[in-house]
Image (cartoon, helix red, strand yellow):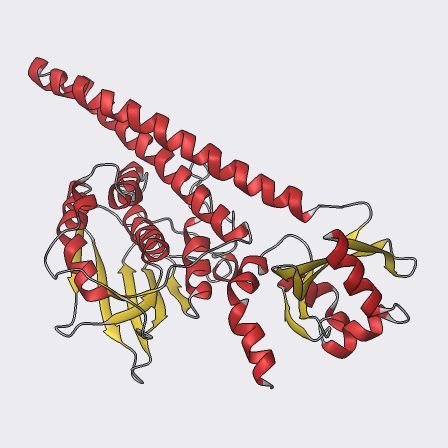
Length: 393
């Protein structure tokens, strides 16, 4: 592989991750029409077109230089029925650096199921704005409830206190939904801008440990951290990592019964090239037949018919791992629990994020900080007092 090809892959890696779960078959190539990426839908339904030679065969007699020029000048061009008699069109959008094309985004679109990429991007932006609005509004409601709750304590009305507690938890549920919707929209917008630093995960987990343990204890669950003495740095975007980690921890708390425990452990991989963050619970577990779909966006497995979720928590953690050249591995056994391992590359010479061990960041004491939004809603779990379901897949 030439240095030019490697440079193309490095430069547009985040773009590849953004289109991985795009709802249309997508192929990304350089200006010489050499294929560097094809998403799952393209590989599944148009495997013959996802190689450089296959793309050349698909384009057939079309003048590719003319197509490149037309796409660059107009911002997008479409080939009608690129597969004869199939109703399949090929949309060609240039990747521009300044005014010069650096590559091409190709989308295979059925004429009876057309989704314009610009419309799709706008929809993710709308979702993000909506989520931010929900967050702000619910934050004000929770602040008001705090004051009312203090008065309820003075009145010693236990039923009122419990009611306000439930309202507060549901408020956090809405906040978490808004946060996850915003986070997922970032990955799907095609404009994910990772701000990579070398982050000391050991120090970060120590700084959040006390708050996380207090929240878990309020649910009747023990939360234990097993952290090494040495500092372990990972080359990551801190905000993206935080969103993924609290989703993993939320799931572990949500599906664990009262009196049980959840563990968080951190260690280097055997070859020293990766940092392994593991979240393990002894909760309900995931049936074997469900595991292949568990990280798919919006996929929800209901242990009971009355309980549902957004299906974005594990999807976000999976996308975060992919965007950082990492991996998310899930081992689970129904009725015995789940272990999720997030594997991330070690520090790669980025700017070091300074964080003193044992010192909590200011945001941790904020009740609307990510740690509270990410974990508090787990208090609504219907499985806290119930026995584990006994059913076969």
